[in-house]
Amino acid sequence: MFILSLVLVCVLLLVIYCYNSFVHLQNKVNQAKSSIDVYLTQRFDLIPNLVTCVKAYTDYEESVLVHITELRSRYLKTKKLTDAEQVNAEYKSLLATAEQYPELKASEQFLFLQKSLAKIENQLQAARRIYNSVVTSYNTSIHLFPLSLLASLFHFEEEPLFEAEDSAHNLTSVHFNS
Image 1 (cartoon, rainbow, N blue to C red):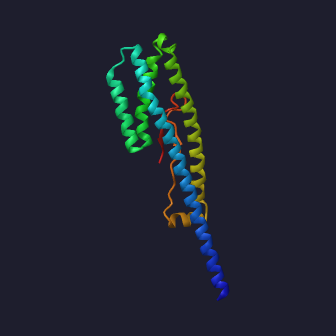
Image 2 (cartoon, rainbow, N blue to C red):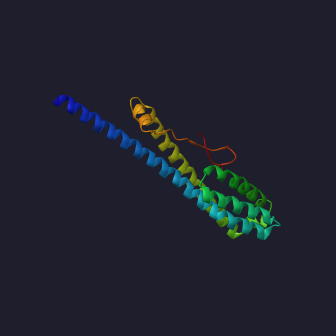
Image 3 (tube, rainbow, N blue to C red):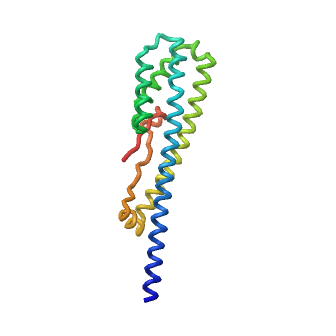
């Protein structure tokens, strides 16, 4: 009877330890996703300044600023990283327009904003790599036997990896594969 009780206690402790490990990894995934969100928000906060700077040198349409602002607001409300893709397309269009104006490219404010955006892009790439690393660890842990049995018992589900839509041309595009 004592041995059976000892075995049950050991199994219970093992289940508790595994459950806590899953929760710990799941929290790390959420933290990494939050880091991506922070950098996206920082980038989105710079975009209106960049639009204003570009407008000062071009006949750029007011509708682009309004559209980017609407998309940015929607993202900030929903926090869906897939909504960031639409803002990214407008952002690329804005930068392409800016490249057509040599006096704009020489503007100190524009150069400062470009450098700030480049810095945020680098931080965003690092956050994405960290996210994928944490998600890989989490997904691996819930698929290993016998941990997979406990993971399914407690409804721990696989998290999607981050993938850039077209990393060769667009490092700012964001989506998560399910």
